[in-house]
Length: 210
Image 1 (cartoon, one colour):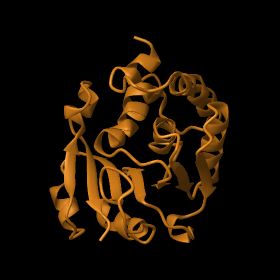
Image 2 (cartoon, rainbow, N blue to C red):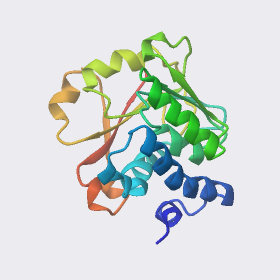
Image 3 (tube, rainbow, N blue to C red):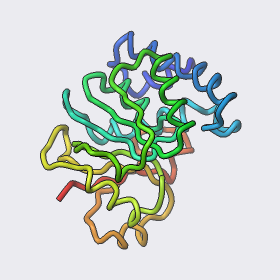
Image 4 (cartoon, rainbow, N blue to C red):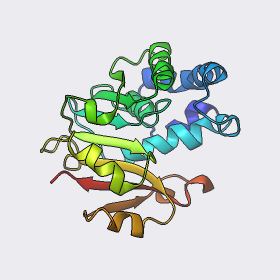
């Protein structure tokens, strides 16, 4: 199975352009990771499952409308924003991280894969002077700390198959952590979407903007 087939097995309707972009990510991340470490060496050989496909679990939960604005808080090397920007080429993505070298990786990846709809910004989330329809992120910090950063960036509405809100990739036992936020959450088990055992404890956690 080729790298792009890992994606097309679950998303068979993507275009030839999207297939080429996904295929390009393997070499691009290998090249950039040799300079700036954003993916562990052990995980790099599982890039398409543990990083790209994992990011795309959000696309299984919510389909963003054309013209929607999505921000990835603590984007690191571009997960989940890089795979999602390829999956939704008519959606505007912004990747935010306070560490400049990680933003350089995202800029290099987007240029190399010819991704036109993702902008990388080196700042803290609370410094962004924009509003978004959705906030996405992957295990940046505990939920109670994360939510104030996310909520002040959101605007009311419904620019996808779910109401505007937060879509957070998390793993493990979440009941106590989610209870501390005093918000209502919907939890989607990624193991029901993708077959690999890596996803056994992985989830997409969603809460709408109130």
